[in-house]
Image 1 (cartoon, rainbow, N blue to C red):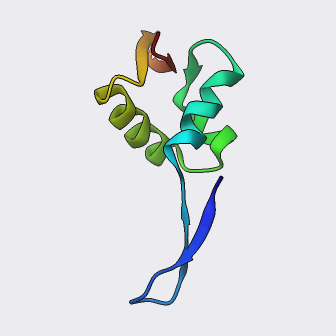
Image 2 (spheres, rainbow, N blue to C red):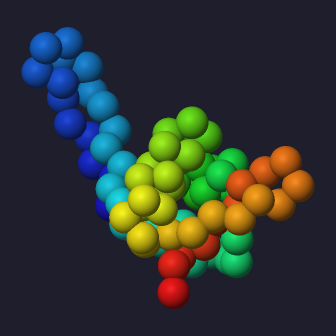
Length: 76
Protein backbone atom coordinates (compact mmCIF):
# COMPACT_ATOMS: atom_id res chain seq x y z
CA UNK A 1 0.00 0.00 0.00
CA UNK A 2 1.93 3.03 1.21
CA UNK A 3 5.66 2.97 0.61
CA UNK A 4 8.54 5.11 1.72
CA UNK A 5 11.06 6.43 -0.75
CA UNK A 6 14.15 8.51 -0.17
CA UNK A 7 14.29 11.90 -1.91
CA UNK A 8 17.50 11.91 -3.93
CA UNK A 9 18.24 15.60 -3.32
CA UNK A 10 17.46 15.92 0.40
CA UNK A 11 17.99 12.33 1.50
CA UNK A 12 14.75 12.52 3.48
CA UNK A 13 12.15 9.80 3.36
CA UNK A 14 8.81 10.65 1.82
CA UNK A 15 5.56 8.73 2.07
CA UNK A 16 3.84 7.97 -1.17
CA UNK A 17 0.08 7.58 -1.16
CA UNK A 18 -1.34 5.55 -3.99
CA UNK A 19 -4.70 6.18 -5.65
CA UNK A 20 -5.85 2.82 -4.29
CA UNK A 21 -5.30 4.09 -0.74
CA UNK A 22 -7.94 6.77 -1.31
CA UNK A 23 -10.31 4.52 -3.25
CA UNK A 24 -10.08 1.84 -0.56
CA UNK A 25 -10.75 4.42 2.14
CA UNK A 26 -14.04 5.29 0.44
CA UNK A 27 -15.18 1.71 0.90
CA UNK A 28 -15.43 2.44 4.65
CA UNK A 29 -18.83 4.10 4.18
CA UNK A 30 -21.13 6.26 2.07
CA UNK A 31 -20.04 9.85 1.51
CA UNK A 32 -17.06 10.24 3.82
CA UNK A 33 -15.80 13.71 4.75
CA UNK A 34 -12.37 14.72 3.51
CA UNK A 35 -11.08 14.61 7.10
CA UNK A 36 -12.35 11.03 7.48
CA UNK A 37 -10.56 9.93 4.31
CA UNK A 38 -7.37 11.67 5.49
CA UNK A 39 -7.55 9.85 8.82
CA UNK A 40 -8.08 6.45 7.18
CA UNK A 41 -5.25 6.98 4.69
CA UNK A 42 -2.94 8.57 7.26
CA UNK A 43 -2.26 11.81 5.40
CA UNK A 44 -3.11 15.48 5.84
CA UNK A 45 -6.56 16.76 5.04
CA UNK A 46 -5.07 19.06 2.39
CA UNK A 47 -3.40 16.14 0.60
CA UNK A 48 -6.57 14.05 0.83
CA UNK A 49 -8.60 16.89 -0.72
CA UNK A 50 -6.13 17.34 -3.60
CA UNK A 51 -5.98 13.61 -4.37
CA UNK A 52 -9.76 13.20 -4.13
CA UNK A 53 -10.25 16.15 -6.51
CA UNK A 54 -7.84 14.49 -8.96
CA UNK A 55 -9.81 11.25 -8.70
CA UNK A 56 -13.04 13.20 -9.18
CA UNK A 57 -11.67 14.84 -12.33
CA UNK A 58 -10.79 11.34 -13.60
CA UNK A 59 -14.33 10.13 -12.90
CA UNK A 60 -13.28 7.67 -10.16
CA UNK A 61 -15.07 9.42 -7.26
CA UNK A 62 -17.79 11.99 -6.79
CA UNK A 63 -18.33 14.66 -4.16
CA UNK A 64 -21.40 16.12 -2.53
CA UNK A 65 -21.68 19.24 -0.42
CA UNK A 66 -23.15 18.44 2.97
CA UNK A 67 -23.47 21.57 5.04
CA UNK A 68 -20.08 23.26 4.96
CA UNK A 69 -18.22 20.07 4.10
CA UNK A 70 -17.48 18.03 1.02
CA UNK A 71 -18.22 14.34 1.25
CA UNK A 72 -16.90 11.73 -1.14
CA UNK A 73 -17.83 8.33 -2.51
CA UNK A 74 -16.72 6.10 -5.34
CA UNK A 75 -18.37 6.84 -8.66
CA UNK A 76 -20.87 4.30 -9.98
